[in-house]
Amino acid sequence: MTTILPSVVAENLRIVFCGTAAGRKSAQVGAYYAGPGNLFWPTLYRISLTPHQFEPHQFREVLRYGIGLTDMAQQAFGADTDLKKSDFAADHFRQKIERYAPAIVAFNGKKAASVFLDQSTNLISYGLQSVMIGKTKIFVLPSTSARARSFWNETYWQHLADFAAELNIEKRA
Image (cartoon, rainbow, N blue to C red):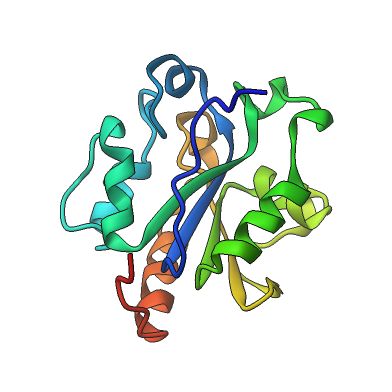
């Protein structure tokens, strides 16, 4: 089966961001976080994970800054409510993270985290989680999607950036 968006991963990255699935606009244009009103790219810049604000079509360039991108459901697209349980590939995601071993996996939204952690979104808190994937630490962040604006809080994203800095994680890509 064909993936909607290719994973952008390499060994020894600082952070791999994992969304639920490509949104409709992202699937249409073939670029991560391309939906109108999505805060992903401006947020990465504001919290100093990137030196400038990327445009969605530049998504492959984040590797230069030790950042990777993937989705929990790579062969489907749309809003979380449009996705079926069979769209998700948690085992494939785990294998990918174990293989590439980033320092941190950051779930962009509770839905992707809930699928991977096999927990209700109500039971998951934002921030650093107590479980890990091998040596990879796990963060859960409020979704940058415009549809999730009522849950938006950039503070957790800043905590992620500060945590990465505290770990003294080099830009290793």
